[in-house]
Amino acid sequence: MRITLNQLRNLEQPVIELLEIISLEGQHYMARLHGPEGLMLLSDDNGQTHLFRSAWQLQDTLSDLDVRETQIVHPSAYHEMVGMEPTELEPMRIQVQRQRS
Image (tube, rainbow, N blue to C red; front, side, top):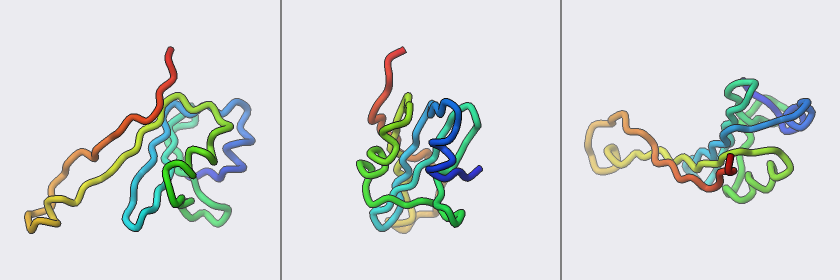
């Protein structure tokens, strides 16, 4: 499901259990949000994925929301880069922030 920043801010009490900052090629980042409404992808008003120039910019944009945990997710294409067959590897995850329960 896609959601815009305005729609997200207009939710009754938006709680983001997990914010995944997905690292993309070309130094771009996108936000995948996990919350009571399910999995949501932050999009612009035209339905396109909202891209950010840094993880900090993305976190600043969502700083007024209740984010319980933040992870940076970095998929790896290492096998392809060294001439091996592509394989299904779990992406590297870096926990940036987590609220105490």
